[in-house]
Amino acid sequence: MRKAKVWIVDKKIVCMLVVVVATLSVGGVAVVNTSPHSVVVIDAGHGGFDGGVVGASGIKESELTLLIAKELAAKLEQQGVRVVMTRNTENAVGKTKKLDMQNRKKIIKKAGASLVVSIHINKFSLQSRRGVQVFYDDTKVGESFASIMQTTLNERINQKYSSRHDYQPIAGDLFITKCDIVPSIIVECGFLSNPQDEKLLLTAQYREELAQTMCDVCIQSLQESS
Ligand SMILES: [Zn+2]
Image (cartoon, rainbow, N blue to C red; front, side, top):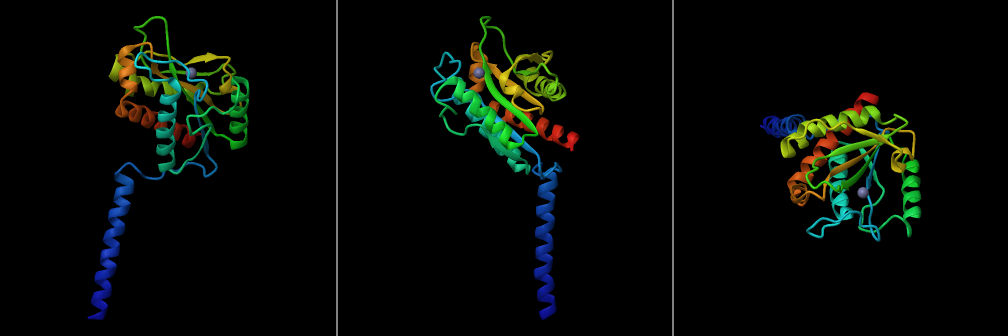
């Protein structure tokens, strides 16, 4: 009798474990196999005195970049990846633009980053320009990471929302992508000069899809490099 009772308890535990394992592996929240030393630095562009570009609705780039950066951080952490954010409040990282950028560089170097993802929102004189674009350092360190990020964003975001599937990552002399010699990219998450992109950026669902896509590419890149 006693034995049977124990078995029932054990059976329950076994069942619970099966459910947990099944959830972890099937539910898409399995902790992925990346190096325990992997660190992704997420840089929410602008902040504080520097709001960045502003949309017709009055939304500031700095507000949107923080929302997207936090969403991406949460998703990576759920997958067991360590995340360092250059800022996680609306405040700037320094009193002047120069100090702000220098402090971001210090944070990136101190973090021992494996990857750096800097989040920004675009603005362009041509109002019809839409979609997500990826930039990387012209020393080519981030070329492969930028390429897979842009391709995946084209497939999962640009094609779905703006019929764009042909963006190529753009190399440039960009401070934030040269703070450390690790794959570093800027993701310009849409155009605040375009009304449809602005509308999308204001929705939690679009920001969530963007963050999920960026998270998946980060995980893939970390796995390939480990
Ligand atoms: Zn910006």
